[in-house]
Amino acid sequence: MADAKMRTERAGAAVRNLRSFLVIPAIRHREFLSHMLETVPKGAWPDAIILDLEDSIPEARKHEARAILADTLPGLIARLDGAVALLVKINGSDTIQYRDDLRLVGEFVSHGVGIALAKTETIQDLDDAFSLTGTPPAVPVFPAIETVKGYDDREALLGHAAANGVTHVAFGAGDMATDLGVERDYSLDVLRAVLVGLILSCRRHGLRLTDSPSRAIPKTISERAWQDVLREECRWDARNGITAKIAIHPEQVPILHEELDSERKRAWARQVVADFAKQPDRRSVVSSADGRYMGTPTLKLAKRILGIS
Image (cartoon, rainbow, N blue to C red):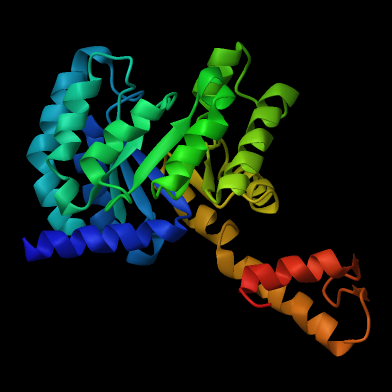
């Protein structure tokens, strides 16, 4: 019991600054994670692992997927030993699988396993999770805004989530694009507008937004090409205040960590503060890094990042 309590406490602490969520189909997680644990250096592990019972599982195999997790989660929890946040993504509240999925997760919450919510659309969706995890949650509760209804009601949903201790929210581009009747293409104004709207709402409520997975996957296009695409996506995220991204292949994880590392932003902030300190009587200076003009708002942002006044 003491070990389980310690894992739960570590899971709650670790969720505060996540950069990567690796999604793995529940029916395939054994070989996936065995390979990761045995061959991937610990420093390249994702910050969180999501065992998916939803989109990656055919309807005919939902029961099998739950049975697999019920059988294998105890051993997996012991092997990970709190090194990464571990969550189970359940089917939406409008499905016949929902209650069974909730019951499964409820069996493992006391051991540090969190809950990822698909297609979050109502306050009740959130409250069902809090009934398992408590408020504030002892383990991660990770809602996903993936539908037009969820987006339309985002202020109420995100406000309720933040008030009850949620820290991270996901954007589901694939399902959102389907609901909008468009291709999953971030260059489309409508999809970009939804993402920007979520960025603003998350900022308003003090939540960290996690972007959808990249469709640039290793071995489907050249190594350089997929890495360049993923890096550019991560850099857009970082520039726009998105702090994490979902991965669907383990080789994506190191790039997510490199590009979304908060230390890079902190290094920029330290340089800004140093540039202003050289000319304390001026309200604007030229950056020593790139020669660009910087005014008082830039200094305020840098100090906010560094937590100084």
